Image (cartoon, rainbow, N blue to C red; front, side, top):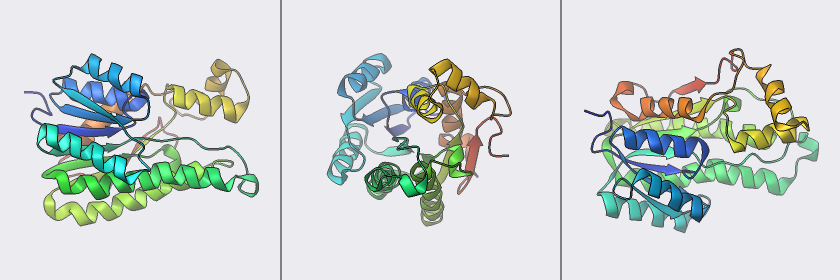
Length: 252
């Protein structure tokens, strides 16, 4: 029996990178998934790959409450309820000192990561079955930080506060809530961050970042997806309120 037979998952930022790798793995483990994202063609292609009997999609801006409510309603109407929420949508923002960081970008980064996760929990938790699992995809910089990333690091730390509050509020229903903290992962999202941060070509920028990772390499999206699966399944049945670092040792 697969680990997620008869389970239903809702994934934001599900059309690429970690979100899509997670959708693939959860479906392989028996779950049906609803993926929400911004890029219609990628969402449609992902569902065609996953199989329309196992997956569905909606174009959803996680900062727009009405869109989040509609996407969740579509998932619940289609599948009868939710067992797993994976808050994964994100943007990187600027790389600049605090004194030079643009206010509009800071606000947008917090809106996507923090307001987006809040809206998913606010409107997703009522439709969840007892005993479910909520995973918020934070970052290694939700446990640490670096100069120049005040928007991203602040948002990722804020997600931990949201998670810990939700974990206490949902414990009576047996719903577990945790944050995941990936290190650099081999995705287009990460490559853009590295090139912007270093000003180097992608392969050079990747090597620069790898010098800061004790294990000396990037994660694959599939490795991060396996950690999501752990938190989503009964393998982590006594884990809640936790910050799971999957970062090759960067937080040490």
